[in-house]
Image (cartoon, rainbow, N blue to C red):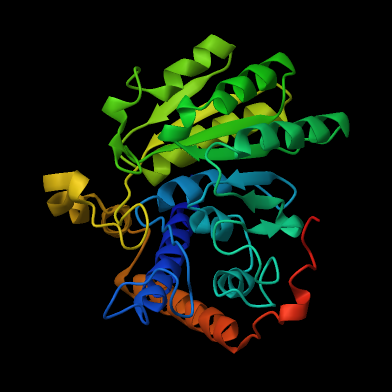
Length: 325
């Protein structure tokens, strides 16, 4: 790994966090004094990925726009890391015509064909879709790769096991990524999953399985690089599980009483300050560069939010356009 690689990982994480922190602010700005999930400029549910940035930047560093990602209901970090336009992403979250889906998908249903990015609110839905994408890539004779992302709760879905079996059987160029943030909404993994590591399940389908601990961007980068390279060489699928952390609620408005004393230690597990300190110590970052990265990310986010706010709301007569009948 060269110096720019690690500094770029850090910059990508800061960019994602700045965006989501602003979305958090915008989302809550007009939902008080009485909480109303349907009120405000950004109505509906909101699932933010603060703390899980190392997974997105570490995996996406090995991908191009020709590679595909199917993400989860918590998708912003992977969308931004994979190159999805921040302005159009923000506009979609605001439900505006300039959004990725013309304001009709919302934050859980983002589609960007130019970057082969998609997501859904259905748990585990991306696994079979990624298999289809990988099969198409293989039949076309390309070295492109499909990446399917889901949480550790989704690893108990039938679609997960069916997809791993099919990918191994057909030797598909797909990387299955599990973001283990310890909580399937409010259910701890110890109450839902018999094995301590979902990566162990890969052996049952004849593919490599790796678990990355400590939410370490460098370790994610290394493990993802091996899995993506294997897929590009035509050697088939891999399973990568990253033990990450969800710093905020499952959704905005989540009181998180189920997390108990863990809430008091979450700031200590924030991966961005920890990675910043590491790179400052090695000289790969300087205080001046940290400020430059922060300022650039803030300016980009401000511009994206302004673009979204200034964009028009879809007119009622467009209700049946761009949808399946």
